[in-house]
Each structure stands twice: as structure tokens, then as C-alpha cells.
Length: 247
Image 1 (cartoon, rainbow, N blue to C red):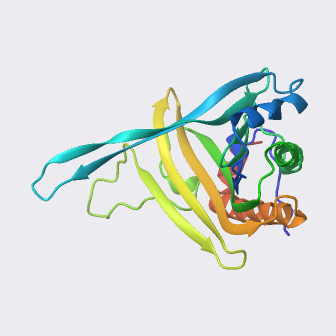
Image 2: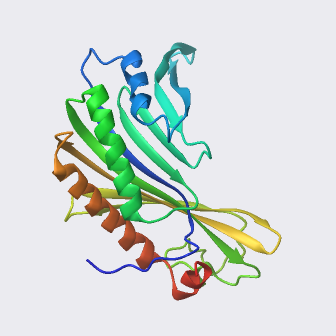
Image 3: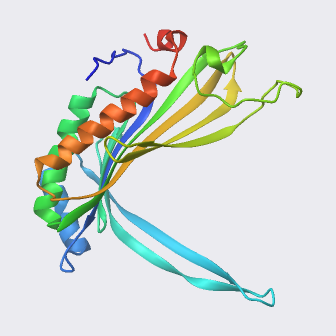
């Protein structure tokens, strides 16, 4: 594996590690709440996590029927006192969020693994069906700027005969990795300029749909592969001029 550079001012706003899992029917919210017992000193705050779904049905005559909403509390979010780290213990899996400032993969992976093993002990998942890593980067580009390609190699193209000014854009790419069986969903957009700075959002979400034993080291070897795929996308996409922003 290549030795990727590490930046003192990394553009990572948030890193997220997600594991989807199937839990036994006996695992309920009361049991999930006990997850906090082993981490209360680091994650003292708790709040419920809720999801809701609703639907619309269109009849052949054009009538619209609103389906009743379904959902409710499906887990808990536990946060550190400073709010920079969040762990989700849900009835369908586990998520670990690390907000800026980010440290490094080894630190992020170590804490995520420790928390996951506590989740396994508490929730007793039967199997893992999907894993994902998501890194939301924000490149703060100084203005005036002539061309996005000075900073990032994959950009939207405007037909030459059209005005070349660009007020906003939203671009989504799905890039498969045949070697690992993973998929990267890359989203780029930009925030309105603030003062003399334009913020480019570079969101990389790498996913693998595969069954794993919850306690298997293969799970974490697969996360290492996802991390490597994410790094290739990031470092092969940015220019040397962009890297100067992070030093």
C-alpha cells in the first residue's frame, strides 16, 4: 500500500464508520440502552434516535392516497461532552462518527472497533450484512479562482459555447472497485462563497455489501480495504495546489 501523506489541517469535516447487522428478536431498546454502561465516562450524553416513513399512492384515476407514517425510536446516540464523537447503537446496526478535527485512520479505527465489540457484547448481532466508510471533506478555496481543476481533477464540464460561469452544481459519481467488491459514491457540490473563500464539498462514501461474522477479524480487514479505496479516490482526485491548503 502507498504511504499517503498526513496533513496538519486535514479537510475532513466528519468521518463515519457504519455496520448494518441483524439482531435477535430478543434484543430490544432496553437492552441497547445498556450499551452506555461501559462508556459512560467518555460518552456521558444519550438521546433517542427515531426514523419515520410515509408514502404516497397514485391511483389510475389520478387520486392520491397518503399512506400512514410508520416508524419510531430505533436506537440511541451517545456523545462525548464536546460533541465531537458520536456512537449510534441501533436495532439495525452501529455507527461511529468523528467530527473535525480528525486525527488519523489508526485512531479512528481503534475506537470504532472497541465500541463495536461492546455493541456485539450488548446487542448480540447474528451477522453483518453491509459495511461503509464515509468521509465528508470541505476544501476552502481562496478567491478569486479561475478553474476548479486547479484544485480537484474531477469537475463538471460546461459546453464551450455556453457561458463558463458556474453559480452552483451537484455531481454524483458511483465508482465500483472490482478488486474488493466495493462501491464508492462520490458527491461534489459547493457552498455559497463566504468573504474571499469558496467551499467545495467532496463527500466520499465507500460501501461493501457482504456477510461477516460480527466478531471476525475479516470485518476489520475489509474496513482497511475500504479505507484504502477511499484514500485512492481522495488523493488521486486532488492536485498539489489543493494539498497546499491542508499544510
